[in-house]
Amino acid sequence: MLTPDQLREYVIRPAQPEDAPAVAACVDEAYRHYVARIGRPPGPMTEDYETVIRDFQVTVVESAGRIVAVLVLAEAGEGFLLENVAVVPAHRGRGLGRHLFEVAESEARRQGFDSIYLYTHEGMTENRAMYGRLGYVEYDRRTEMGLDRIYMRKRLGCSAPPQQDVPCS
Image (cartoon, rainbow, N blue to C red; front, side, top):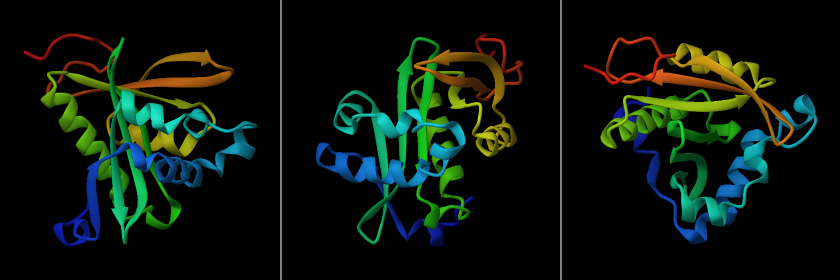
């Protein structure tokens, strides 16, 4: 987790339409190492970030005036979706990604959700392991747009099993 002193290095703010090229560059840098592993660009690398910024809740993180991390959230058919967390390699390992997960989970609670879900490519094994350490539990596997995805959910603020979509008491 980032300390208050470490957080001072960053400016965390809502994305603006003019951020779209920098958001796309951040995502590209964060995901490009997966292209060889999965045989094609991961879904986040193919997004139109002008549309994403317009249609979703997008937060950017700046350091020295450069976007170095992105968080994309949305209300979706299955609940509150953590669509994307991308951190450029030079800023990994500092707790920034974990901080963005906490922001996402807080926002889900603020909007009245008792769980949050995400999906990832099955070949992104280190991400799957990290999500598990953060309390996310696999609940489905799907092939969508030619990508083999694993869906994971985390219950927020109650002890019901993550696989069950029941309200917290």
